[in-house]
Length: 430
Image 1 (spheres, helix red, strand yellow):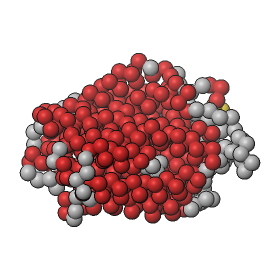
Image 2 (cartoon, one colour):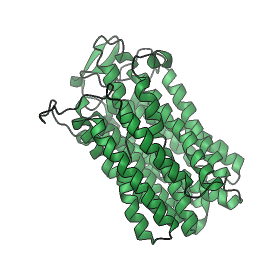
Image 3 (cartoon, helix red, strand yellow):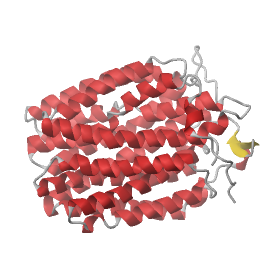
Image 4 (cartoon, one colour):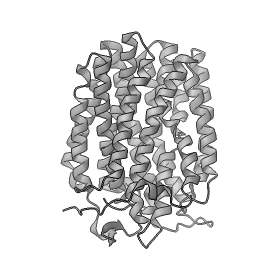
């Protein structure tokens, strides 16, 4: 039976922690482009090729590349430090985005766009996982438990921040692409990645201690996050969440085109993402009386249920309302998933674990963008909305069948101030 959590400290106390604003502000700027990348690619490539299928395929290549490479980048950041990974990463990403824009506007063949999409996705900086690792390093190192009690609140705060970027990111990208130039969204994405990423990398004081010392010897046992069964189960769940993001982005774009009002796409997606953010704020402020595994199952079931009705909606107001409900169900699943994975892995694999989940979202989004784009081209936007239903339903089946693997080992936790914590105080169990 899962432990009942102690009351959760509030956001105000969390944000008063000394030193956290030094990485929060640049971290927010640097992670903003992640929410702009896929929709920016879809809008640019659809404009230059006239095909949602082609646009979705290019975006999918970017997502698959990110999903495959992000965990390796997270592993390197754990071993050698975040700055060593970030600086070359943001430089490569900005150059790759510039190449992709140039090729698309020049009418290059699809294979050339795929070739540019590979390094674009592979080099996406994993700012969200790195910020989460910095929270854990700043708060988890306090053995008295005073700061460690803030770790669940930090996990919720990060999810709220992620959702906020998905509120404004697609809206900004869509506005730039439709109101300024089809490539403007990707131009802004590349510029923000470069400036925000370099400023974030410069904040060395809050950077977690690398697991290799100056002589190259490992200071902690090497453990792969993906070797933990519970992380693999959560990755499947996050694949389903990615299918919602990808399916919604493409299908809403196609829906707005069918209405003859492309600009409404950003508004509809912003409402959907606003639901994520609002639910995240509430989840972070509540002291839950049920354990995280049960919360994840309940939240994921609600997400699947609401996603099942998307294909049947015909009007923009109804779609906005249903999109809001879908968004309200995503944040609880994301927050609970990140909280669970923090209790399953050692500190030496922390960033890698976060990037596996982020990569799973990207991979699910990539697959959904591809399939939804093909369906939207062939049958219209309503067919594209079937993708979020299929993705979440399949993931829910796996989650229910393998839920026992989400329980952390009793041997890896100690009890402090009424809450269960791992020995390395990475993130407390809630």
